[in-house]
Length: 322
Image (cartoon, rainbow, N blue to C red; front, top):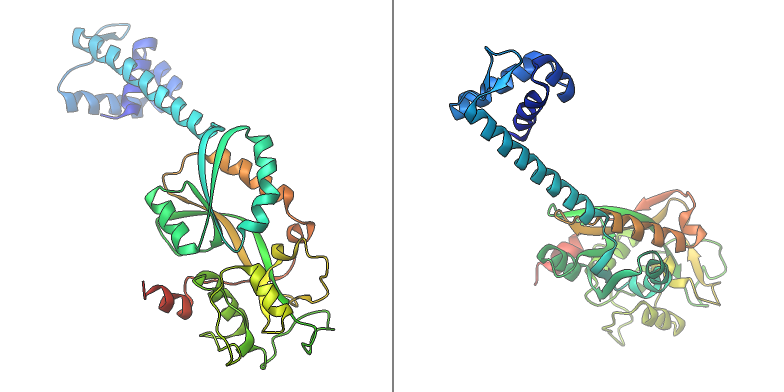
């Protein structure tokens, strides 16, 4: 028994004519007749007396048709409920953002989101990639804003924008006066990375053509998780950094932030949700809000190379230890 078959018997009861009922259901008359026959054979009851003109339901058929009408009404109510849920712009939304993006993106778009969706209460959590993926899968978060692709088949990804990486050099670097940065063999041992940001670090190693991190000057080691601290280490001439473009948005002295030549290395930033996430309209509104507040340079078309992280040997090795 199917919903479509129930629609057919209700239409037949209303029209009392096979051809007219078939037109109402937008199906061929033979197709409707076959479906009615299949349903009657399945339940072992004749729903209509075909010997009468006009077509007339049997006594049991009348009760079946009445119940079919009730089921169809409830089906429509479910459909309406789902549509309303998808379009609802109120309630609570738990958002997770990767820590290398959160300090720069959240202040840009949250004010716009408050104006667009005043009835939505946003709970924002900053975390690393592994934690965000886990929390979306378990339901602790509704949406994660992070670099993709994740390679996780249980998660749905909705790309928002592509963010280029830029190099940050100190004043003594041989390319400090150049317009673009090109990786120098002598730079690779001095690449500054973030502690426990395996996704982010994997992207930087890919850009530099490295499989594992090098040592930063034998005199010291570091354990940091902030891009702002990376910048200060560069200013202290303790290495160089490759950082996301949004992280230099408010920098006044930007002569030492060097773009790469085309194709620019970029990370793809996306909404990541579970396959059961239903608030599609809210996701669209968030997408529009983020896009509207991005710098024009990130909206423009440019040649790029998307840097992956989930298949990096460094990433696979790092997360296998946990």
